[in-house]
Amino acid sequence: MDTEWACANNVTTRALTWPIPVYNVDRTPNEGGAIRKIADVILWYNRHAERTQFVIMQLGKQSMILGFTWLREHNPEIDWQTKEVHMSRCPVRCDTCRLDAKREQREQHIATAQIHAC
Image (cartoon, rainbow, N blue to C red; front, side, top):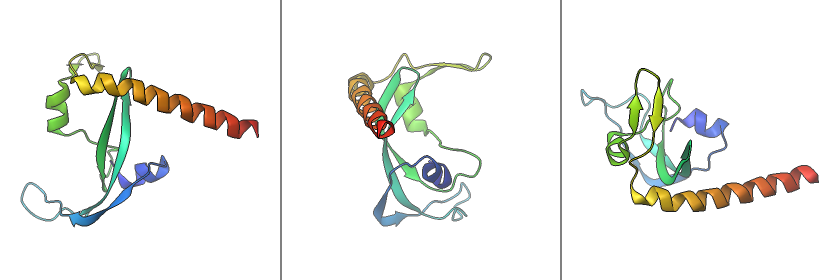
């Protein structure tokens, strides 16, 4: 997840004990520097929801990048012509997490409504 995007969207991060160096394909150090923070978030896409962890770093023009491991595990159906994505082959943990995510979203909505009422 991009550092600036995380900050602009109030994503809670936590510092790593030790930084993780990032290297380019040619084995040179990435100009964005080492990974120093992570964020535990609920990733939402249409009806898909899951708890996941993102590293926080400078990504340039991208807000976030889903890695090959995540894509292989979820195996989304992608229609490149229509740009439609269907999350129909997710691991079981995504379904169990959906209820927790909805509950947290509902609680956040109620808290926001209470703040606005004041």
